[in-house]
Length: 153
Image (tube, rainbow, N blue to C red; front, side, top):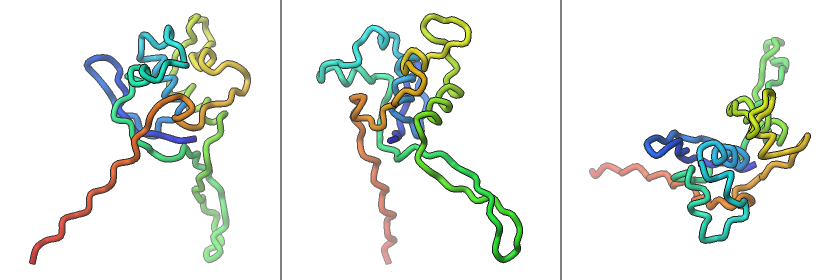
């Protein structure tokens, strides 16, 4: 699952940084912060794509969504148990769980116990978009790091 770094527009006066935003999270953010999102089709014409994602600004590629897994291993020298952090690609179920915790927003009907994710990704185990191309969002490559200037001698 790809990620991006961007600015998330919350209203006409404020935006906040978005780091490691996944395609599913981009859809959720759009549903929450774009008043016209519910009325627009997900299959907008190509000339409408820029306005379609107006809640995300300065979008650049981030990387791959990962989950940290702690494993306990025995240190061969000291024979003590130590925690070792390993990373693996995040699953759809883990991403849904992360989004449910991060965006505590009721579904469109507003019934208790419902979540906005139930409206956007219906079903018991929905397949989430893995790339931004799948949702029609153009992503710029990450900015190249500037080479430090060498002092003149």
